[in-house]
Amino acid sequence: MTKKIEIVPIAFVKNSRKEPTDDNWSEVISEIELASDVPTESLDGIETFSHLHILFHFHKSEKTMNGAGHPRGNTEYPKVGIFVQRKKDRPNHIGLTTVKLLKHTGRVLTVANLDAIDGTPIVDIKPVLKEFLPNDSIKQPDWSSDLMKQYWKK
Image (cartoon, rainbow, N blue to C red; front, side, top):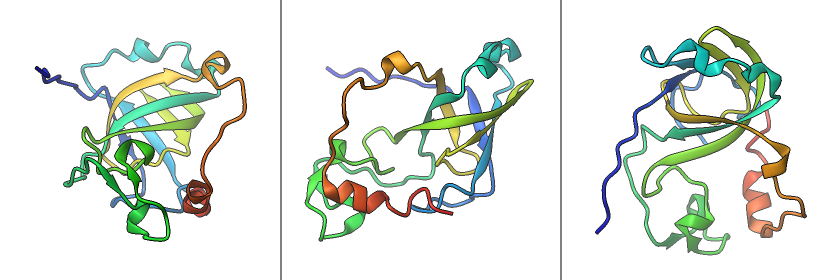
């Protein structure tokens, strides 16, 4: 029997993106501000890292996809399972992005390349350690590179 789990946000996103969109995220600079019940010292030493993994909740996603579908609904891409895509309409609406840490001031992190909209609840922050990154080449299908070609453009 599957048990439910409860996750409480540890921080929230502040940025200029108010609605979810699929492309042009490079121009967005975000602030991640700790929730009021999270101690400021939780971020002590974080500025010694250049990049962070941010786990967040797609709080505006109203659909849940299980099974398979065409990425972004594009029938020119193959029909693939939800766990082969990074879309927001997932079973638990959890997102993961690697961001560049630009600044740490008190309870606030300023980051680049966070593809989460204003108000998004953050569920965890982890430093990027090169030892956890792949030590061999990354393989991915051509359709995924095509899908992402506008994602980080300004």
